[in-house]
Image (cartoon, rainbow, N blue to C red; front, side, top):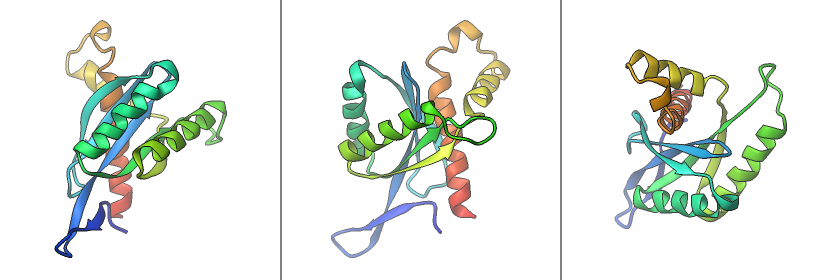
Length: 154
């Protein structure tokens, strides 16, 4: 299985499209994006999760259009045992709203360690804890996306 979604262009050639990753939280949504070849994952932005998510859904749809996104992966918060709980169900409901609004496939991947890894990376980079707010989320999304892309290449 390839890591990159593709679609056929007007000339019949396959066009690579990007994958968008979302690290969903009640206050903020971290966003990361792949390069068109599906090799590199990079943090993109943080979206405020406001008023039932309507603004966030619109921003995600804008990003899908602007970056030619063909696939979205959403971090799924599982319990340490691997079980799904109420938080995971909220994320799945969010993912379904994203799929309906953005019009692209949505996949899910275990995100249990991404935020901790992102905080550790910022700590090691010398970013003080008080300055990390809003910066952790897109890095966590990039870590999630990196893992998802690696799994697709295997």
